[in-house]
Image (tube, rainbow, N blue to C red; front, top):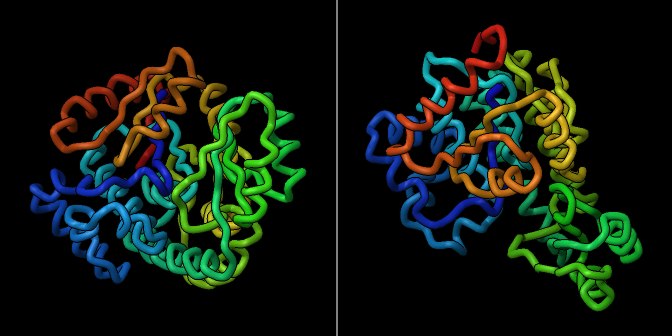
Length: 313
């Protein structure tokens, strides 16, 4: 069984779209998505520096566009995945790949998501800190003790705490035993109650869309469960902005489904890295450049062949 996964914010690097724009069809499609999102995605994906693409309102549309367009080039009319999932904003990419919404609607949603989350983050000085190692129960207890939220649970030994700058400073002064704390270069406390204003704005946009039911298994960050109803997918995407990402539960579901191959859409590396530590025995592929497409299609065909009856895309 083939799983296709889409990374979240922080995966972007300067110039990562440059090789893709040599494809005129890709470049044309990117222009269309740029018009929908109100951003020059070609500029941000090729010429902008790290600071410019760290901006939440830029990073999120850039990531979704990159993932959706690469998936289109990769899959075409060939076999599709047996399951799709995305981490944080990658859920919007995953929803588009699963046919819940077309690429243009995904861009409409993510552009509003990025703007709304950036504005919510500006209201109070907040941030996020990765807590690496330690015993999971002790890590979670320390996060709770300081009034923080475990905003990302990426598996054993990989939890991200989020909250105000003062709360994170208190955690740094009183860390859980045998844990290493790494402050993250992010604009705010994503996936916490600090993002509630963004939920309201995103809900208004999502309400005007007419989603289809997923054409393949689509997992939710909320609980790692498969969501089969298109409207529920959008409702969950909206609520997830202010709720913790349970990628650990998505990993459990992928393992339980019997996934044999996992391919990460560009900019790839983060989720395949997590999978390498948590999904033993599964073949992994990180797709980053168009010169990998032939090999990546072979990977898709190899693992999609064991997915059972073909699911219409």
